[in-house]
Every structure is written in C-alpha cells, then in structure tokens.
Length: 108
Image 1 (tube, rainbow, N blue to C red):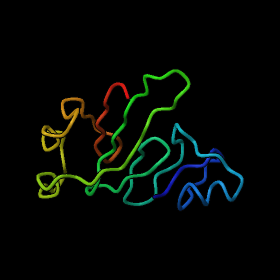
Image 2 (image 1 turned 180 degrees about the vertical axis):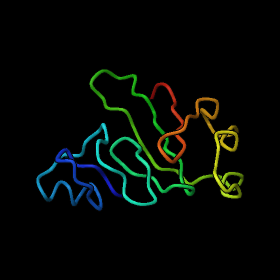
Image 3 (image 1 turned 90 degrees about the vertical axis):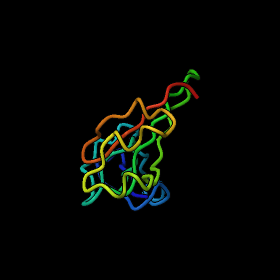
C-alpha cells in the first residue's frame, strides 16, 4: 500500500520508506498517486476502497487508518457515495475524502 513519507515523497509501502530512512507522514501531505486518495499516511484506491479512520482515545497513541474494500453496493455505483456505506460500522459518520470515502469512528 503506498504511503506518504515525511519528505513529501510517495513510497511503495512503509517498509520502503523506512529503508530510505524516512518516517511515514501521519498527516499524509503528499500528492496522491493516480487512482488513489489520502487515508492518513496511506493511499486507498478510488472506487475500490474506503478509508477507515479510527480516532484513538488513548493518550499518546496515534489514530488508526486502513483502506477497506468497498461493499458490493458501492462497487455497483459509477461514483460511490456515503449512502452505500450506511450499513457499515460508523456508516453514519461518512464523509468525502478527496476522490474517495472516509468513515471516522470514535474511540479505540
């Protein structure tokens, strides 16, 4: 999964960034690669995945970000919308994130 490095470069994965001596940028300030959209330090695939953002409720622990495959209802849409994520956990907390969808869940 592509990640954003603190040097503003996109790396193939977190391991490649670390091998180059670069930390992953939790704020994801890099330009997304073609067909991708930002998900924390990661990039999800537009129209194939959504970003799951779980807010940490533990002091000093970072938020969690993951790219999750869109459910079948979303994959049948030309442009997926938050409506197709309504049945997912935190589906009522969906927002548009760049060219993709983000579910933000509190706590954890």
